Image 1 (cartoon, rainbow, N blue to C red):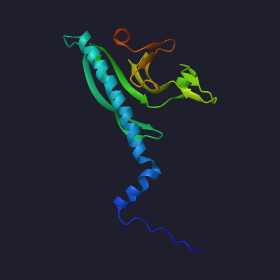
Image 2 (cartoon, rainbow, N blue to C red):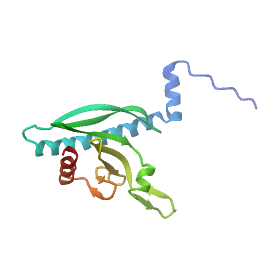
Image 3 (cartoon, one colour):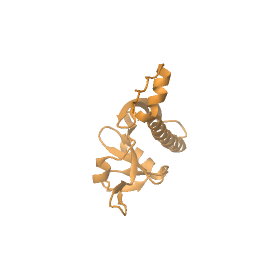
Image 4 (cartoon, helix red, strand yellow):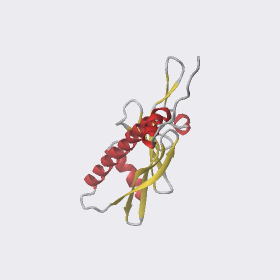
Length: 172
């Protein structure tokens, strides 16, 4: 029985459509969009809390973008925020959409399933830092709209009171 080799796609469009699933391009685009949307929602919440705490507009909140490269997501531009108050400034930047060894080892955010596999409790990290001190905002894997803060010692829910306390410390 003889087989005939497949003919190559005739156009670039045909090639792209034929290879998109093989290369996982559509899934990568979907996962990247989901991560960036989650970061944008977090930033909208943080900006709302800052506006409520600062009705006079004393804080200068400047959006910017950072370039990130992640395995499985490729290279992309991600939103970031700079917050200035007098001589003090801090940045809020997404670091990773996925779990990391850092989160496994330090935050001990793992659950062991019945198969013995380790499942991450957190799926995504955004850092807030003034250059001297840093906090991690960790996105829960099971409840993607829930973020927690990690200061190297304590894991706490990210709410308005906690965010304001972090801002006061980093802007002091």
